[in-house]
Image (cartoon, rainbow, N blue to C red; front, side, top):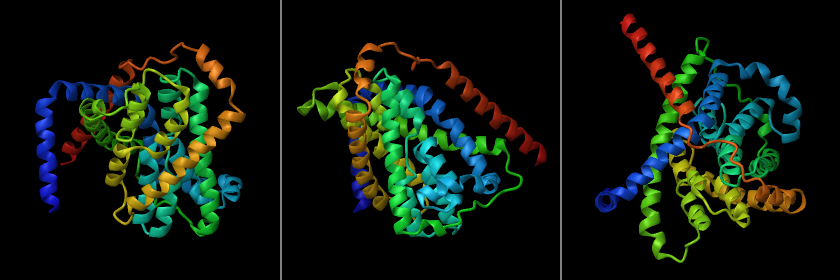
Length: 347
């Protein structure tokens, strides 16, 4: 029965593709643009660094530095680097690191589910640069969005760690002595390429949904459409043109949750032992708390943000600048070519 449903869905998508080829093509081009200008520049460096730090065993020698933070969070100091990297590195890093610990039998399945709920964030690069500066034209709004999600994750960590006794976990990563930065770059580039492919696919689906489904709904506002489509692909938030500051709590919720595209990537990266449905359900609740925390911070501490955002209409970064990303892609290509030649010489 499942195969029949998959076949029907595939045939429907094929028919829709031929009916709306120009629309889907435009969506794919927008997806490529977002990958080149947002995803690759914001995630590649941190993905490579986090992979190297965990696999080379460098983090294992830094436990003592994290003891003060560990006492506040109520976790073992070995978990602090994982929590930090997960919250600043971007969506896939948290689930990838937690899955590695689970597959290595360092943590239990239950502990993996708990960690996955708060080791999940878009990171400051997406919240501040892509959304705060490029959409709302104000860095402070992006910072407030990121801090709302970060504070919620830390509060959830402080509560759950004391309930489920995460302080007893010694999450030392298994180190590989010969693991180099070159290996980390190769691993990060493979993960990032796969991630970008999924984003491009969902960009086409979002464009298809916008012109086939949303046009028959009462949702005509550009901001509301962007929010609705961000449930499929969270990077679609960067397409919002007419900004209404009343939607910021909804933007916080969308970024904190991630969207279907992010969770599809998580399903590929996560351990088979982890049930993503349970993690997703917990993440929905946490995302609601993130939006609530933003409302509290925005109402009492960040009232000047609105005035600053209305006056600051200067675009600080050029989102259509392809040069850095193209250089990065060329570097990755040269790296693969070099490693392939070295392998052929050995053979």
